[in-house]
Length: 79
Image (cartoon, rainbow, N blue to C red; front, side):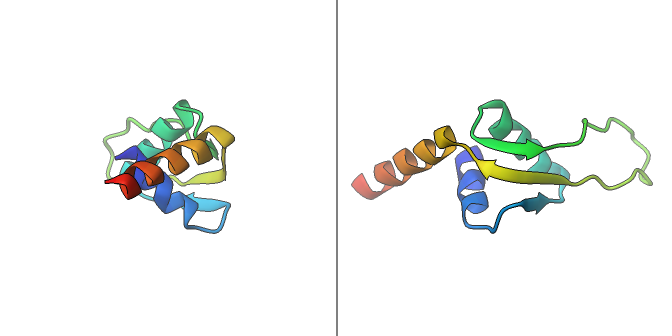
């Protein structure tokens, strides 16, 4: 889930580099929701196995992202 990935990012030293296609997709969701600022390469639709491996970089967690993390943590503690 995206919030779990946001929590993972929050535990890293920024800027944080993302390597796997699945993590880059998760990062796209977080950026689209304005929870992080990040440099993300355009989606690669090449089916060629020799395609260049892409990297993305998280620059920061936005104020909205920090608020979402705090709410998620509060909800977890209340359970």
